[in-house]
Length: 355
Image (cartoon, rainbow, N blue to C red; front, side, top):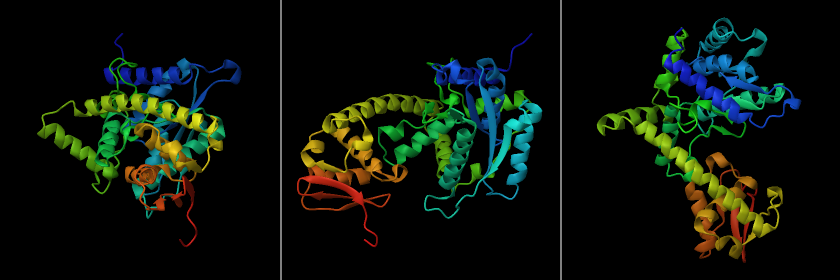
């Protein structure tokens, strides 16, 4: 009897390894592990839902399907219903384990509708995960998404952490399609794989028109990658960016660990909630530059700065208070936080109302 289509087999293998790694230390006495999978109805998420439907029972993992309706398009409710129907009628999920969640998206958000929709979607998925006691939210990001993420980080002049892109398993978010060939033979899973898997499984994915809208940065990055691959004759560019992200991730993890160790030595405690907002200039200024910039980011976020908006130029301005101070300051950073040098200390605090 012939086996599954190669693309179907790869998506299943990625999910199998992702679940095994995520729950390798799960104690059976705590019950059956549970995950929530986000499904949009597109090829990536349908292929993921199909692979989970096949693999999760074999791994003794329960799955809840959540379709998030952003309400940004006229037919959004219909698209969500179609995705739910595919999960129950074609993939075999029990109807009580499939739900549609409508969210409100602030299309006028300062971050733009793309970021606002993503935030609303993640909040909805994590809320359901908390409700049902799921240990992970499973997402369908592919190697193509990772390449686009890394390209955008390069264009923004971001540091190692941003260049690492999305992680396969971090902060309760499991992305099995991002597992590389060191874990999944034939991996990572690409958009071409998910589309082929849907064809092989007779699934009809929805094509989001926003994926062709050049107003969105990710769409422009996707278009740019295609042009670079063509004009530079670099058909493996996306895979190269994926490998670069994996290498940057390893470096970023090491530097983060060393940074936390340095802050622990300086404060005498590994409890970050005890790390102060007042720091002697000498204490932070003498850290190695690679650790110092990470320590500043760590402390700024800990004391109220918005991580998603904290850019390299903010960190550079704050760092100059330590190593190139000539009376400048205070420095405003996103999140209504201000950093000042007062005497021999750098002080992180809230910006005064009306300031």
